[in-house]
Image: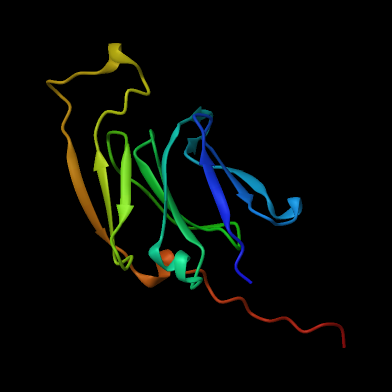
Length: 147
């Protein structure tokens, strides 16, 4: 049975997962887009196209820290973390089959107008070819009970 859920990102660097028509125990919140004591807004959340087909439960977050992460909702694990952009990532999306992850790098106003420097800011749209190990959860190894 596939469980449908909505995801909410916050300026506190958290993502909340709320399941629709499911037990409250399935709902959870986790921290992301943080670096030691620095907390960054979660700007966007996007779902891998295979989520709609029930193949896997991968979604991506991107934030004001200039990083994006791939997550597996079912195992509650980060599949891939990439932090290398020197600016924020205000938007992103998977292509129709999930083989390309596109994201924009530009100022997102999270630091206010006083930190916006148009002469130094550069805006980019970047493409990342995804690999299965980045967007698909590892198969769980079945463990046997007591002997």
